[in-house]
Amino acid sequence: MFSNIDHKALAALLHGQGCANNLKTLLDNREISSVLIEPLINTILDSFSLALSFVDSPTPPQLLESSSCQNMAALVHQRSSKKDHESPNPRPDDGFAWRKYGQKTIKTSVHQRSYYRCAYAKDRNCNATKRVQMIKDSPPVFRTSYMGQHTCKAFEVYDETYGSEMIQFDQVKSELVMPTSTDHQAITIDDKARDHTMNQGCDINDFLVDYDQFWQNEFPSFSYGDTVFS
DNA sequence: AAAATTTGACCTGC
DNA sequence: GCAGGTCAAATTTT
Image (cartoon, rainbow, N blue to C red):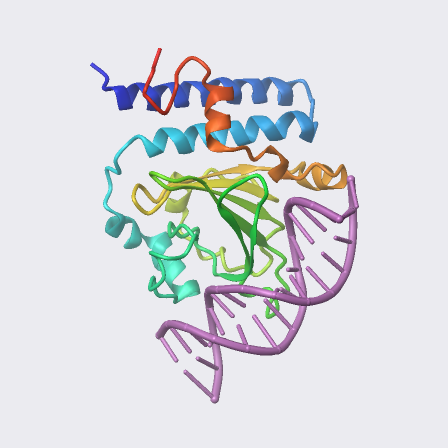
């Protein structure tokens, strides 16, 4: 039998699957409208994130740290984890070296949003940036939105085992990463439409919603707080 | 001392 | 005027 937690995770995954199917339908119909696609992508990501948050990590972080991709991350990163406990930056390394350049309080969230750009932005004229924002407290869940493209080539020597955890397409990506308390898994989804989105004044973050709001909107059949599940 | 982070100021679009 | 994104000086860390 499934535990209550399993049910929640399952419901989140099923919801994500449904949204993925909707997305596929849109893409099949060539409806490449960012306005339609963006919410679906974010919902899918949130669903995965949520599901993962209900499941204890089967793999100790140390194992992931020792994987080839993480070794690569160490090569390009060389940063200690001294501030893991106080930084809003989720430590599941995405393999790129980032440098924080700003932090802002966002009106729609109680959590601050952190801004990072590629550590090689100047050296290699790389325009990749990412924004990290906590969307859920316990367990901490972060939404990471990737902007721009890595032209620094830091990713080229990556072992393709990373692909087993990261679904990567190309161009700009939106990513949800799980917190350090769980797995170092990342789901990366293509967001080619982002530039259009931005041009339309419809930033990807416009689809960021309060977690409770998201839960109520996306899973109206059960309440997260007091564990009413159907 | 160099590198990285923090944080208030500034810029831009709505 | 407000909100979000970026800059850059100050501060902290290594």
